[in-house]
Image (tube, rainbow, N blue to C red; front, side, top):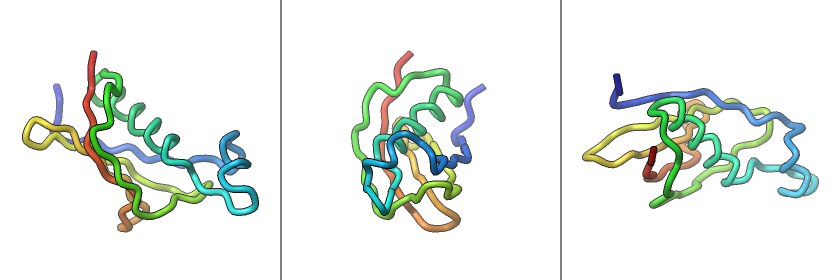
Length: 99
């Protein structure tokens, strides 16, 4: 049974291998790592792979070891995502899934 929304908590550990180069001395979680988390949430929710990122906007940084929540929503036949830390929007966009 598919529900119209899905949420998953995420936390990228401070020792993640992508962090030393993004950015040295002041690491931020790269957008591609956040999109990877969106893809994993889509797989858990719908059993689909992420086929396309139609739109993505990153509006605030996620720091290593900070907690955030990914929300996936079906709206008008489209799949939308949001990533929030508490109530602050970090990223949003539209994705497409495929079997």
